[in-house]
Length: 137
Image 1 (cartoon, rainbow, N blue to C red):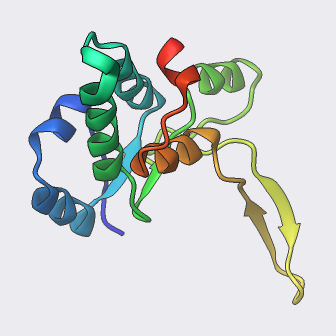
Image 2 (image 1 turned 30 degrees about the horizontal axis):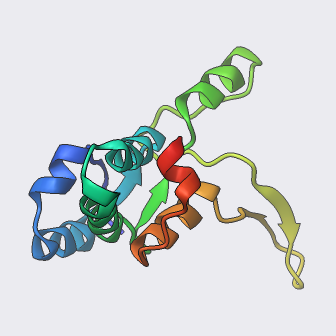
């Protein structure tokens, strides 16, 4: 895992699959929630029977997900946490929220995070499983 990099949709569209693999090899990708919304917006594009827009969503989601990527917390939840006095790190790291503290068998402690809904959606989109509800949003 290398330094964290934040990509926007235009960068994702411009990079080839080979360049994406190179990027993932050298960087840890921070996925902003707005990027997922921008990809979802492709479904609203006016194309005949939406096949082109579905194909674009599938291509972008395949480029985006890897084990070397993580979806960052939404900025609004971070703002609210900060206003409530909860420390929000400003150290160029990916911020995750909603973790549960767990204890290991040997007495160690850690934090467990469930898979975010956004990540599950991206996985579905990779396989071409795009629900009609997403198109209506």
